[in-house]
Image 1: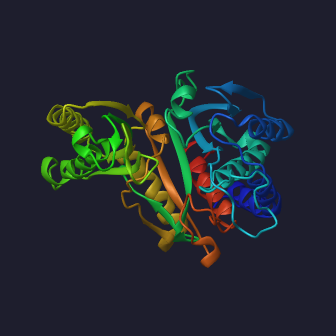
Image 2: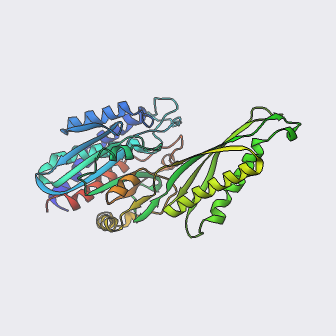
Image 3: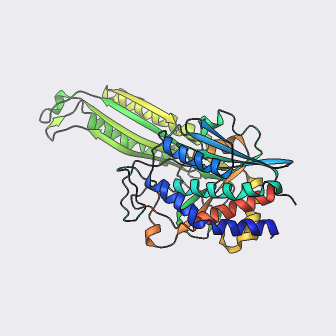
Length: 393
């Protein structure tokens, strides 16, 4: 470990309390996707306090701060997301969300606080950097079309060589780093199916075209798409998460609505599943002589970690963190950092944040929390990446 790296590590440790205070402030003041005005202002103020010139309003409420070294070299980028979720915070903690029905239930407050802390330390070592570092703060990760795509359309990665992101993981013990190459998170699609039948009295079904029966057939048929149309060696999921119809026990309604999600890794499988869903919808509509409308949204693509670059980062992590590094098992969750990785080589890794039962709740749970010591590990992992690519030898 070089003297500069050791000094930066000390500073990261010394500011732990401050970084935690930022995280707790953000946790108390969450904002939903596409509504993160005050969060963006908080980030902007902090970056300006550190000495950065900040670009704001990128793809919505996105922000970018650049640290330019005094010598030519590669440009690397680190990204943190900062939107919250429409979930009521049920934790009994001092930093509980102050906004009813909205909370940071996925760790985005931690990602932002950690990247702010990393930026604060690194700007002091500008003269030790050979190249450039971009600190990207992205809104609206939770809801397609997401914030990543909009930011990228404004060219934020134009001059970037490599891009990186970390995500807290409540399923991993604190101290563990999970990394791996190839497809690691799934593509996510959403569909809404509206069934227009004809309603009537529950005692006279022969006079109706029951949308509940039609919808039930659709649910059962859609469950066969993966089991009978997708190669068993390739992963896919079709889930119906909403089925709405009717208001009374003895009335057959005239309309029903289904909503569901499709998850996949392979692009061809993704297309196949959509095609099969549309075919089934059309077939059942014809069979029941009903009008069925499908609205199909292609969301985030699958997240693909560049193999060569990820192998390099894994070797760096193994050298520094040794037996704390574990393999990143593919997940059916989705992440719009996948858009960044389509544009530039990079890697997305997970940082363990489970210390006890209070920090073991799954993401998107109303009791979600994480071990705040993980914020230091995110910064230390980012430091190892920066050291490898842009620190002077």
